[in-house]
Amino acid sequence: MPVHRPAPTLVTGLLALLLATVSLTPAHADTGIPARGSAYMGMGVLAHDGQSGTPKSGDATQTEGVDVAGYQGNVAWSTLLSSGVKWAYTKATEGTYYTNPYFTQQYNGSYDVGMIRGAYHFATPDTTSGATQANYFVDHGGGWSRDGQTLPGVLDIEWNPYGAACYGKSASGMVSWIADFLNTYKARTGRDAVIYTATSWWTDCTGNYSGFAAGNPLWIARYASDVGTLPAGWSYYTAWQYTSSGPTVGDHDKFNGALDRVIALANG
Image (cartoon, rainbow, N blue to C red; front, side, top):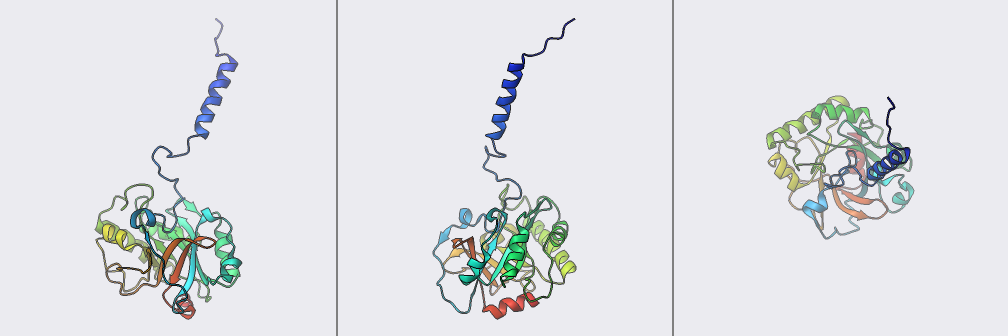
């Protein structure tokens, strides 16, 4: 008995249609959810907290810095240094599924021009434990050495760009996750990680927990003329991300102190 097969032109046409549909439909396009790995420091600030002014310039007691991630590609570090930027943080990892493909150029590039630099981890508490993510971070660029130019790692803990803002965790569950990360990072490196967050997120998702303030420096996110109210426990901030639209790379920050204090944090 002969076998009836679809005409080649019909098969070709159906395949072409399928490929066209796939190419024109990016992942999560119907929901607006970004692809895993694409998150970066301050990604949710404008949407959740907005922007209201910028800080005054020329304050000698503050030191300009930047934070960068893979989406910015190769960074013009010499340009930033010439503009007065003295320190930088580069995204190294996210969850346990992403490493920044531009990490070497960004992390080593800032070091090579003489900046003091460090690495940060974008936390996803709904995917794996804090300890697992801390180990992944340290194993993929988040370590520390006392060379005078390497800052302690940063835990970037903020709004979930892929789902529920607090990653489906209760306040106590979130605090436990953060503690797991911080304790593991310190055991691996000997340093207390810096915590990057926004006061509104911290209040909503940790219940405004104050227990990390004694040991972990605070990097606050607020796009305004001042830092506003800090999370509970911290009487001062160490760094402040104040804009996502600064020169060259967008995200600009101020260290709460002169350059010698940045060096002191690097040296531990």
